[in-house]
Amino acid sequence: MKIGILGSGNIGGALGRTWAAAGHVVMFSGSRDQAKLEGLAQQAGHGASWGTLEEAAAFGEVVLLALLWPQVLEALPRLVPVLEGKILIDASNPLTPDFVHLAIGHTDSGGETVARQLPGVRVVKAYNSVGANIIGSASKQFGNVTAPTLFFCGDDAGAKQTVAELIAASGFEPFDVGALSTARFLEPLEQLWVEILKSGIQQEFILSLLRR
Image 1 (tube, one colour):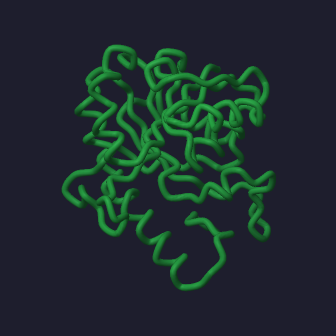
Image 2: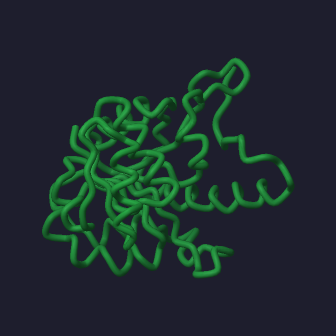
């Protein structure tokens, strides 16, 4: 599968490398540093490339949105023509510029905002509350759990099935938590993740689901 990566920071870089290792072909974008994009493509291998946001959006059968929130709001209007009909995995979080609070939350969500700005695009929320170090780790094992759950939501059943397969390919157990409006609960998990990190715990943790 061809996957366009919009945003080549920690999350976009880690997922691009992980999906490339799983046999997908990725295109990185979203950095003004050309050398960084070239380096990510080289690290990912398996035919990975780099380009502009527009090129990556046009390239991908599935597109990952991993930009900072102000960049999301700036980029989406010009990407509408090339994203129509595609699956977009929204890994962004609608944070204020100081990264302290949600700019949108509780009665709305960043995921729903993205979907409203991209009519005809099949938006699925995922990967917004897991550390890049966990995504990029060769082992996802925590105790006896070899594949921790990763939550996702969306309104299109077919898009969610495809995203579930990509989640599994990245080493997690996909767990569907419902409609895209459930992003109102998933996005605050990122703030909880940060508060846990502030408590002094090392970054080797994940917010997941244990069942018995």
